[in-house]
Length: 264
Length: 133
Image (cartoon, rainbow over all chains, first blue to last red; front, side, top):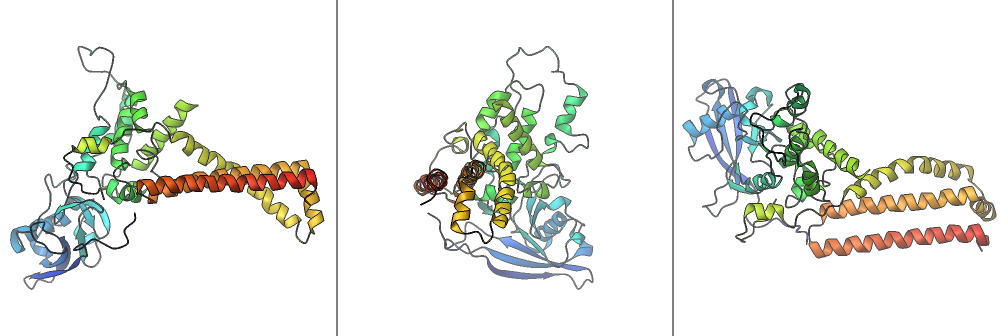
C-alpha cells in the first residue's frame, strides 16, 4: 500500500556551516547533502562558504576544493573531470547534471547539491546505481549475430554508422551512462523495479538501430512489456536533463514505432 | 526508489524479474487511435448539444432515434469509454505499486466502464427502437 509518512530519519535537516571564504570578495555558498550510513542520524545539508578565486570554475572544482581544504569527509564520485566518464552526475541547483560540466557562475545564488534523485544513497553524494547497471546488462548491450564471424571488421556504411553517432555527434552511442536522465524521469521514480528508464532504453535503441546486429526481434521481444517500455509517457525530462545533449525521448519513440511496425 | 530487500538474489536477477509480458503495443496503439477518433466525434457531440438547446424530451428522443444520430452516439460511447478504460489503466499501473490492490483496481475499473458502456448503448437502442418510454 501507499505510504503517506516518510520513514524515520529520512527528513533532511540543517547541517554544519563552514566559513572558508578567507575574507575574499568573490565568494559563494555551497549547500551540500550529507548522510553517513555509519551514523544513526538524519541526512543534513552542510553549508560551505568558499572563495571562488581559490578554486576552478566548475562545480566539481568547488567540491574537490571543499574536500581538499575544508572538509575531507565529503564523499562523491569523480574521475575524468571532462564529461566523459559520467561519475560526477548529481543534482545541482535542482537539475541533474555532471558537476564537471556545470560552471559555477551559471548558478544564481547559493549552489544546492544533492545526490541523483530517487536512488538509494550509499553516502553523501554517492547514489547506489547497481539496479540501473543491472537493467543495462539485462538488455544485453553487445552485438549479437547468427552469421559466422567475418575474418575482418563487420562492415557498415557511413550512413548506417551515422544512425549510431548522429549527424551532430549526438546519436545514441554518445551515452556515457551517467543516469542523469533516468533519475529525472517521474515514471522511473514510481516504477524503477520494472521500467527500464530512458538511459537503458536509449541504449536498447542503440543496438536496435545498429545494422550489424542480428537480434532485433529478440531485443523487441524483451522490451515489449507494459512496464519495461510503455511506462514512458513522453514526459521528456530525460532529454532536458541529458548533460551530453542526447535525446533519449526520441530513441524511445523510435522503439515504439518499431513495435507498431512489426505488428502491422 | 527500488526498495531495499535482504534477498541475496543477484542484481541482474532482480532487474530481469519475471521477464517481458510481450504485450503493451496494442494498448499503446489503441490509446492513440481512440484519441484521434474522438476528435470528430467530440465535435459532432458539441455541435449536437448546441443544436438541441431548449429541445424537449420528445424532440430529443426523435433526434436520437434517427439512424445516423444513434450510430454516431453509440460510436461516441464505445470510443470514449474504451479510451477512458485504457487511460485509467495507465494511471493505475503508474501509481499503484501494491500488486493485489493494483490487480483488484484494474479489474474493477474495467468492469465499471464495461457496465457503463453497455448501459449507455442499451439506452440509445431503446430510444431508437422503442421510442424511449
